[in-house]
Amino acid sequence: MEINHFINTIIENDIKSKKHDRAITRFPPEPNGLLHLGHARAIITNYSMAKQHGGYFNLRFDDTNPVKEDTLFVEGIKKDIAWLGCEWENLFYASDYFDEMYERAMLLVKKGKAYVDDLTAEEIRAYRGDLKNPGKNSPYRERSIEENTSLFEGMKNGEFPDGSKVLRAKIDMSSPNMNMRDPVIYRIQRAHHHNTGDKWCIYPMYDYAHPIEDAVEGITHSLCSLEFEDHRPLYDWVVRECEMKNIPRQIEFGKLYIANQVTGKRYIKALVESGAVIGWDDPRLITLSGLRRRGVPPQAIHNFIHALGLPKSQGETELDMFYQYVRDYLKSTVPRINAVLDPLKLVIDNYPEDEIEYVEAENNRDNEALGTRLMPFSKEVYIEREDFIEEKPNKKWKRLALDVEVRLMHAYFIKANSVVKDENGKIIEVHCTYDKETKSGSGFVDRKPNGNIHYVDAKKNKKAKFRLFDDLITDFEDKDTPFSEKVNPDSLIEVEGFIEESIDPLVGDSFQFTRNGYFALDQDSIKDGLVFNQTVSLRSSFKK
RNA sequence: UGGGCUAUGGCCAAGCGGUUAAGGCACCGGACUUUGACUCCGGGAUCGAUGGUUCGAAUCCAUCUAGCCCAGCCA
Image (cartoon, rainbow, N blue to C red; front, top):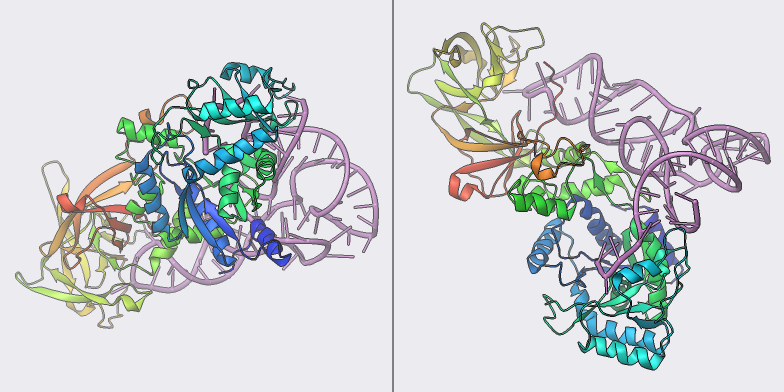
């Protein structure tokens, strides 16, 4: 499939004009949290552009701030990207280039394009001016090249305490673009780095580090989100003044926001730490790991991302659109079997006591390759409690009721005759009769049933737990209450029921449970018996 | 209000001077159906506003309005 959007056009033009002969891209996550559905746009766009234009895609961890980062996230991010099927050509770390970054910064110093500033953080802020007023020069701005050289070297050698000095690019304190008002490019920070250990006590800032990373790797098109548009002049300045050989071009696109979902790393972190969710991979989160656990296939994510296109504007997409792509992919790729989530016993009075027969059922009517299976059928079966009502309420009711005949899918027509209730009036059994002539596959057409419902045999089955999910947060308007305190109590509901006996699923296997939706086997199954997560419900036009 | 960016139906989004203004999601009808699923048919916008250029504008120009981003030694 040919992907086309404004970035593709830019790349095509660059190739046509011989500026580049292929596209080399990168995805540069900071390892301070896990990825979510929104990141999939960036990953897939970078990956697909490189692939479509004969180049390759690097995964690069942007680890320039040791105090915020964690190697656990490195592993999680690698797993998520691999799961998406976006193979990276190289795995790099920004920290791989710390030496080169230092050398290039020294070059800036030698060119008089950078200086060491002794102002405190507060003073720097004050000198920077504000949106309406220009900043003013730091009193240290005119230090000599010799002094700057020795001071910057001293910074590197640990001669000064944390925060006492910074290296700044010398650009223009009166620029209307705040990013150009002598941005800080190095700070002193004695922190242990997950990659470089204690080798460094100075660390580069993003605006300085990122263009160098891109240039060193030979990235041709550096794709990022809209908020970096203002940083592009600085990006270009760094590439130029540091005299980088390869000249990458930064192009910005709109982030993918999903309406009413928690995606901010600090918010997810808070939910995880408060125990409001079970982890970054909680299926109620739209983290990639949560979606994976929920049973979302990565192909559905690709289809969704491509369907969305790549905008320069910034909107937010409804989750329903995503779900539809999930259904669409699963529809013909996974088996459709029966599961009863809220069982009600059905006794077929005229069926022989000890007989069991096996009826044949196709695994997916839209995909014959998935084959068929045999389903047990006997005198007692379970149906969904909501598929029975004593009195048919209206002509639209397409399920079972007293004196009403429905088909048990793949088996027989049955007609309900009476109910047994407990002392509270709750129905505990429905008695019915079946008509042997109506067996599925027999070609019986003399009567039409009042609908088709599914069942699981009452003896030959497997017990299972089913987790049903709803929005984690329902009230997004209220900004004052932390998410952890307003988790929707119905966002996770676990029920117990049965699935067909012949199903022997592995963790991660997906199914359509007929009339109930798509489900995947959860990792908790290992210790607890079968536990299924509802990936997404079936669409329904049923209205009560 | 300094700078940067955006604006097409409820949501996403094609469109790049001449089209009845694609398509998807959602919604509402209806057909079909051994999943109230799937599939299929049908339904809705004059393109942020106003002025202008033009035989002709969502597409060009001007002005205005609205929204987003920027004042971290975060990324």
